[in-house]
Image (cartoon, rainbow, N blue to C red; front, side, top):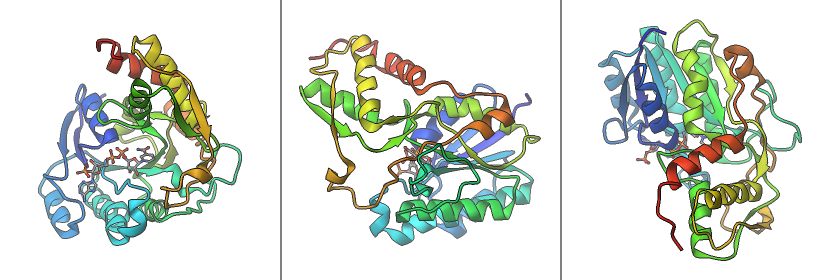
Length: 297
Ligand SMILES: NC(=O)c1ccc[n+]([C@@H]2O[C@H](COP(=O)([O-])OP(=O)(O)OC[C@H]3O[C@@H](n4cnc5c(N)ncnc54)[C@H](OP(=O)(O)O)[C@@H]3O)[C@@H](O)[C@H]2O)c1
């Protein structure tokens, strides 16, 4: 594959930083964090993008605090919907591909079977609504752009639920997680592999679902993380995760879909890549991050 000039925005994020690291092996990657480009300043963003060369523009930025979006509504709309449109238009002007990320939270979670791309979206909260608005604005600008919905992202760039549950089990002999909400974890470096074929233009754009295969509740996800962490040599105080119902999470402000597993058939058909099971990805992550650490108690 020929080397591409890739510009990544929101470059310090969990997903974006992994994309930058993985794609730097074969491509020329420039990554801008908030300090280099605050995407909320739409006019400045437009000017900045007009001043740089790129073949592919990637949006890793997002107002991702699901509950925070309920109160910071205008900021969420600007970052999740209006800024992606500015990026899409800038990419279109250059004939460049634009890759934007969205979320399983665009769904209401009532389907009880994996969601496919044509399934109707019906977000329950403002985060999901602004992400859906962003999807629609980007694809209305050009169907050649790529909008990729991911779920439960974990990876080396930034701690996530996985690291939080391991930390809790290092310090406590009882840990809990929600056991009646189901989704599929997504390993950030795997996303880089799945999307690399799209960096060469000919593959069709549009909406794609991208996550590791298999599914789980937060409780099962946490318990598998503890199993691998113990295997990697961490001195955990427990490898069991107790279940709590979502309804008991009083700190959650925004409604969340209880079932939001994404079908990846479209991605597999387009790229020939079937994502590996989340167990394999999680094991790799935990061994790479934690196996070299001295045992802690
Ligand atoms: N994490 C998940 O489980 C998950 C699930 C579904 C979908 N997604 C989607 O995946 C994408 C990437 O998420 P992620 O997990 O990598 O999230 P993340 O770690 O929170 O990264 C988002 C990045 O956006 C940056 N950002 C926010 N507002 C900005 C602004 N005004 N200007 C410039 N940068 C700004 C943040 O910078 P600061 O650090 O400076 O705030 C942060 O680095 C998002 O589109 C998200 O909606 C994530």
